[in-house]
Image (cartoon, rainbow, N blue to C red; front, side, top):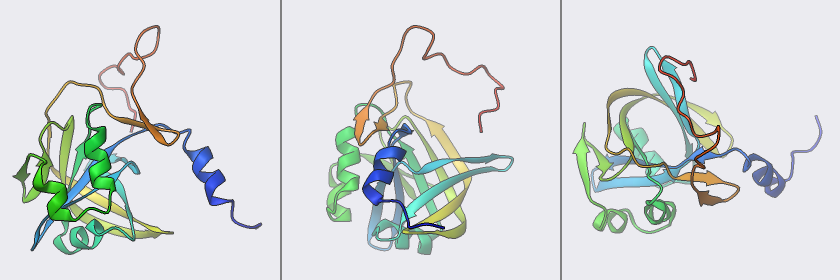
Length: 176
């Protein structure tokens, strides 16, 4: 095996994969915590499981690990500033000071998120500078029919509509 690829080049190449943007939230003894994430996906329909990659340097991850529960808040196209707040090094109490949210199953659900899932942390696996978490979905909901916030090539963007693109998959399509 040769030397590891250059990190900047890797970021550039993998950045061609468009993703949604989410805020992962949890709750510890000092209050709510949260971090922006785009490394997550549906893992299983039966049972409903999600996969989330936690940065090992994150202040949110140790609290979620101890609590054993977290929420995934899928962000709307107009929540890019909110995403920036949760990606910053700002203190946790400051992050939540102006962010309306409700507690569901003991974890913060951000008002205005497109959709949300609360999860019990089922398993953790090492993954380089991240830890891969598997969450068992215990509650979920949809707040909006707006468009998602999309991350592509190092910046926020929106879905394109029109032409033959932009149609939704038919009900029952197996996309997981």
